[in-house]
Length: 377
Image 1 (tube, rainbow, N blue to C red):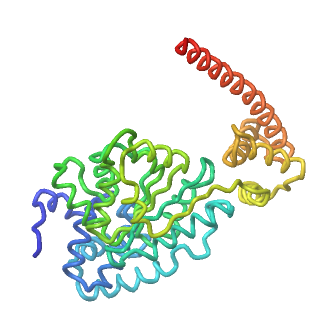
Image 2: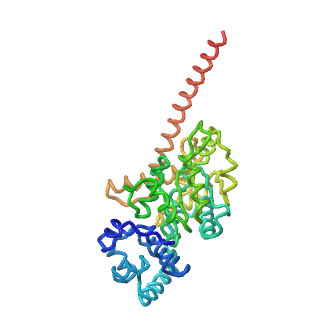
């Protein structure tokens, strides 16, 4: 049974303006009603591939008139318009992500993260009773956010919906953010927003960064996590949760939540607990400084930074970025010698900071022991 469009929204949406203003749930509903399943999948893909473009950019990208695009996306294209559009969409979809320069260093962690995301994409559209969660747990600096964003931009085939790590609030805020990502007006009521967001997420893949923010300590229920479970149960959405592994485990252990409910729904999980290697450092260097030589002296310092308790693998790329900024400020080309100087200084600072933190920790421990002894008297 078809649902009538909101007449006010329909009026607002009908004339193509500078920014694409067609709500995603209207596209999904109208295309599913008007086209075959395969045709609808391709047209919906084309819409989400262009959702962040302007009308003019989308028309140029697809080499189609904006009015034709508007009609096809609304399920109102003529037979000839639809046939031509489908041919164009199919060719672009086939070429998407191919021969593109990678947006991330080819580290061990990155390869495992991308493999997990590819598995998630393969699960899209399968039976919604199948496990539909992918969990990626890694230390800070492993490249989770970089890989998620790069994969969403280069390899999603128009299916993915990436939720940045600063967009996780309460359940209502999450639903509003999903509405915004799907061109749904967030001024409508929350109860009206829920089914519209649900319709948009069918046969999609949702990437949630810093997913440990979904957990709240000292609670029996986890409403934000349960919202996503319910979303999976009612659609064919695949949900990827990428989290700092130590924070996720710690937060989950502080709740009274039955964690089995979550882990049973994971079709695949990858836990990146192994430290980065020399080859990973070399991969980051090749990606960030392809024209420079990584000397053994610099690689050794990077290894020390990577192994330092207050450093880590993410600090290696941070040092290179600092050196790049320093070179720009001095209006000179980046050199291995400059990176070496910055890396040496930062390693020295880490060692000083380690001694300060160690002393502070020792003082806190002594104070706790003293307080315990006083209470025991």
